Structures are given as C-alpha cells and as structure tokens.
Image 1 (tube, one colour):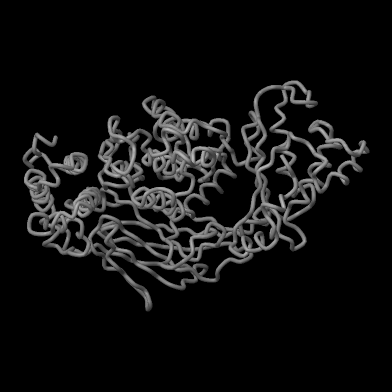
Image 2 (cartoon, helix red, strand yellow):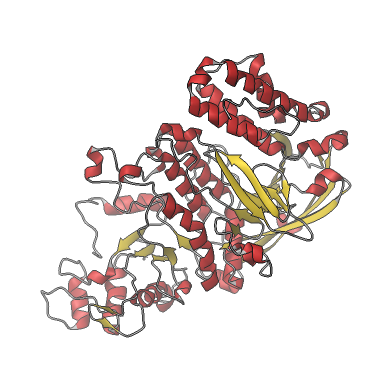
Amino acid sequence: GAFTWNEHSFPRLQKLLGWLKEQGLPVGANTHDHDGIRTSEKTYKEVCEALGCDSGKDIPFDLYNKTFALAQEDIAMRALDSKDGKQGIDFSWIDYQQGEVDTFQQTTIPHINPTIVLNMLRSNDPVRHHENRRSMILSRWGGLGNHRYPVGFSGDQNHDWKGLAYLPYFTSTAANVGFNYWSHDTVGGGSDLSNDYELSVRWTQVSAWSPVLRFHDKGEGTGTCATTNSCARIVPWDLPNAFFKAVRSAAQDRDELMPYIYTAAWSSASTGHALCRPMYYENPMDSSLYDLNAQYLFGPDMIISPITSPSSDTAAAGFQQALGASEWSVVAPGAAERGWVDRLNGDFFNGMQATSTYGIHDVPGLVREGAVIPMRPRARGESSLARAAKPFMVLEFRIAPAQAFYTGGSISGKAEVVDDDGVTLDYLKGSQSRTVCEYTFEGGKFNFKISQTGDFEGKPSSATIKLSFPQLPPMSIQVPAGAIVDYNRELVGSIATFPSISLSEGFSVEATIDPAFDQVLPNFVGLAGRVRRARYIKDALDDLNTPYGDDRANLTSVVLAATEMSPAFAAALPDLWASAVKQVQALLENNKDLRKDTRRAKFIVAMLRAGVEHEVEPLTEAFV
C-alpha cells in the first residue's frame, strides 16, 4: 500500500525511469490505497500537516473525508507522478478490494461502493489540476457507472480451463452496462497446471483478442514453487519454444491490428458500442444469437471465438501439447446482403455453423465478406516497443475475401482509421486525422480511393500505404514510380506497397485480377485453410526428421502454393490437395517413426480430415 519507492529495490530509480521513458514506455504502479498513509511514507509529514493530525501515528484511510481524500491524491499520489520534466509514474493501478460492502474501516456511506469514488477521484486528477493530458487508471469493478473511469482489472481469477472458458462471455456481455475495457491477468496456471503450456497459449490468445492485453503475475510465479518447478509461467519466453512462438504470434497479430482496434475505441467513445460485444448486437431480433457465449463481435467487421478447451482430455500436459488439434465451431449470423468468410480457412458462411480443425497458433473467427480491415504491419528490424504510441506511418488495408471476387459479381467496402497524439485532450477540439479507404469491385476490377482529413501534433506528412488481397490470384495493379507488388506466401495473395503517399491530396488505385485465372477462380475458395493445415502437417513431419522425397512432394507444393502460382497450377489445386492427402496417408501407414509417435500421427490425421473432400478415399481407419 506504500506511496514511496523502496530504495533498496530501486537504488538507481531515476536512471531506470529515464531509460523506460527513452523507450517510449509509460510506467504504472500498483497501490493498495486502503492501507492509508503510514509514518514510513516520504510524504507523511506533509499529509499530516494538511490534515492537522497528531504526528507519529499512521493515518487511516478515510475516503469519504474530503480533506483526507484530496491530501492523499494531491500530496502522496502526485509525489509519484511524472511532472516538471522528472519521470515518475504515468498511470495508477488501484488494487482496491472492491466488494459490495458499504463499510470499510471508516468509510461508512450506505449504497456507495468506495471503489467507484476512488476511481473517479484518481481519474479526474489531470482535469482538477488543469493539465492537458488524458488520465488512465487500472482498477477493479466499482459498480454500475464505474465504466466512466478505469480500464478494468478483473482480479484474481482461477487460471484453469473452466476460468478461461468464462472470459469470452464475461468480457463481451460487459458491453451491456457500458463497461467496455476489461483486462484479465494473462498468465498460465500454477501448481499442478504449471506445465499446461497449451493453457498458457490459449489464455494469451483470449487476452490478445480482448479490449486490453496485459500480462500479470498474481503471486503464483515465485515462492516455494520454484523448488518444485511448479510456478506459473508469467513471461512468454519462459515457455518452450513451440508455445512461446504461438504466444508471440498472438501478441503480434494484435499489434498489427492497432488501427482497427484504436478506431473501434474511438467509436466506443462516441457511440458507446464496445470493441467486444455479444453476438446479438449484430441482429437483436435474431433469437439464435443469444446463446453464443463462446464467440463475440470484435469491432465492426469481425467475429472471434478463441479456443478455450484443451485439445485432448487424456494427454498429459507438456511439450506434446504443441501437437494438439482442436475441432472448433463458430456460428455465422444470417445476412441478407453479404455473409462471412472464415478468417483462417477462406470458406464462406451465412446463417450457419463453421467447423474446422485448428492448431496451437490458431484463433478461429469470421470476417464480413469484402470488409476492409485496417492494419499496421511491422517492418523487418523495427522495434516492437511502444509501437501503440506511435502515429500510423504505415497503413495496410486488407480486403477480406468475398464470394463476388470468385463469381464475377460486384461488391464494395469501406473502412476508416482514426489517429491522434494519443496523450493530450486536444482530440476534444478536433485534433485528429481520419483516413478513409473505400473500393468498388465489378468485372474483376477493384477501384480504390484513399483520402485523409484532419490534423494533430506529430501527424506524419506522408504515409506508406499497403493494399493486400488474401486468397486471390496475382493482380495487375496500377503502380506509380517506387511502388512494389509482391505475391505473398503467407496470404496466398498480392500485396501492393505505395511509399511516401500524401493522403491529404487523395490517392486512387486500380487493381485487376489477372484474367488468365478467370476459369479457375473457384479453386481459390478455401485455399487458405488447405495451406494452413498443410503447414502444420509439414512442420510435424519436419520435427520428426521425416525425409523429403516424392512421398511428400505434393504436400510441399501446397505449402508453397504462392511461390508456384500460375493458371495451370491453380487449375490443378483440387487434385494437388487430394494427392497430398494420399501421400501423407501412405507415410502414416509405412513410416515406422510415425507409427510409434501416436500423438503426432493423430495430429496429422486430424489436419488431413479437416480438408478432405468427398472424392478422396477415407483415411486409414487405424489412425482415424
């Protein structure tokens, strides 16, 4: 509960805080305010004088005494703040036990939760002191009306699979009372769950697709558990490499979506609609959307359903969990105009359930057909520190697959990106930029118009713009000098890069699907899923040192589909996948190492079955 830095733990405090500031990282401190002001505090004498109390005694917490409350905030708390060029803390984590009890020590006002009072007081500190900065506090639930003040800290949860499965429902339905920013302690299980690495990964994925991603050790990462190797894994690099990479991927995916997330936060401030919302917000009249507790709307154009159950009920926790295949379903709401596309598989759904098999890296979900998803890719070598605080100097507009792209139909899409300085209150005076990307598609041709209005302190004078087209053949794109068009292996689609664009002048682009692919366009539907599953299978075989050769050549060709893309190759895609399945099936039957490694074999079979078409012979019954 102290308001004083421990000089033994932080002997070079200002050097440390200065370094963090140089990295662009805000600093926060966790305080237990209900402990009051103790005689050991550096500000004790000043607080005591302000209260006219007897020196030498601890000052008890008395939040509803205005004199005490302001002395705590304006003396003890502000002594810790960054001010006058001296780095201190930039936000406060109020770890106050919320409860619904009216009485806590001397705080005795019926029907008022003290947490909401403290949250309001701390949150309004910059306004009370006429400072041009936004406040941020992290705090527990303080009752209805508390949504105005904190980023929510949901407290000490049960870090097991049951606790994890509750979070999508809990987080999204909070939108019904305007509490739009829950964050959860992101940490693996402790004690007997400390080696459940799959649980650690899935917990991070849920948090990455929540309003706030926050890692935190609630006390299970240290102590006597260190002697038994049963401490909870707090930081990602404490996990074995296969799981660390999955955690890092989830964090990077979120980081790349910052334009989408921040713009949704802007919308939340003006409309009250949360980033994460229950499914029935899509169509309140559709009764089928009211019991979908494992999925939720994420921003304007996405549905997310993180995996919250183990891939096996019988397998022991540990390294082998990296070879866990999970069958998972997401329900696509019915839509009159346009349906949904599976964000990982590229198949289309409308008013039906989408079921597939997923691996340790995957977070199932849907994207509205033809939606424009604003992103900010990270350049090679760019630091990942404090990227969220930087203005959007690079924007990628990813065009979600739509059935019209493959059938010769027509469709249009539009997205907006809001940016500002992220620190001051100048946005209330209109200091922000709005970048709009809109397109029409007809006859195999996209027509894009990208423009920007508004200004703010620190806004870049130009930006690099990227347009990406997952699960489509190569594009013919009108490119000015310096622009680059690549056919991307990960997306199986084109990415056009336009550097140093002055968006205030407007920017138009035409992109046409290569007509040579017109007859084979239907073969691209679902290609993303087949490539995804082929990569999992290839990695599983590589880890076992299964020799390369003709008996896995077609699988490799599916994995490298983007590097071999041509009209002839696209025409052969259905047969290529069927042949790859047969080749891998033969390996499962004949490779003695695979026959010994049952878990690996079952994982491979699960990935094969998810993409097997009806004309392919059934997989070996022994492995099924």
